[in-house]
Length: 266
Image (cartoon, rainbow, N blue to C red; front, side, top):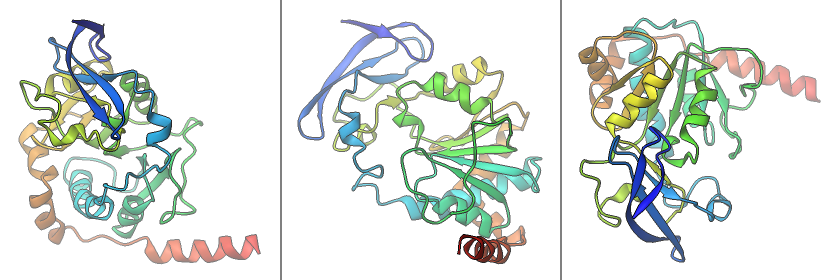
């Protein structure tokens, strides 16, 4: 059965299978034979799925913030990024990752149009202006995008480097129900990327595609040796590299600015 055009490479997709999401909605999945991208056709249930922006089964927010903060710190320090620059976490959830990165000494800002910023208040970013960022991070967001290229066009206007996490779909694509990352119970995962689809995205925005092979990836105009990226982005190795890269925390400065804001508001 022929399906809609692929959202990544515009090739004609084929029916990949169907499944039940949120225990009651039928989802139809289509796969691209050219680039391997798989997406859900017309996820009409998304408003219901996002009645709570963080799914009840997502217990990894704190774990990811710690795990990925060390990888991002290593990338900034060892791959030629400006440590004193301004950074953006897009789709920042409760703000845990932004707070973690600021505690490590990096000027990270927060943006999320769905979730309340609880831990990085006072550091929201205005992405409607002309400001650009040294690096943009966006973790566990790509698989939620209905219009991946449209969103990435916006992100690419804000930065020349996007660091993100998403589980790459195996090849050949597993049947619906045979791969945990489809995660039909939440109804929020609607886009699934192959390595080739990520390369096509990078080419479209004049970037290079990097991956450490599993969940951490980067799109960037910066030329970095692939082995170096895999080394410093690997969460296990980055945890040890962290010991040799001391930084000056922004915690105390942020505390003082918070006191000033509270005094002004009062």
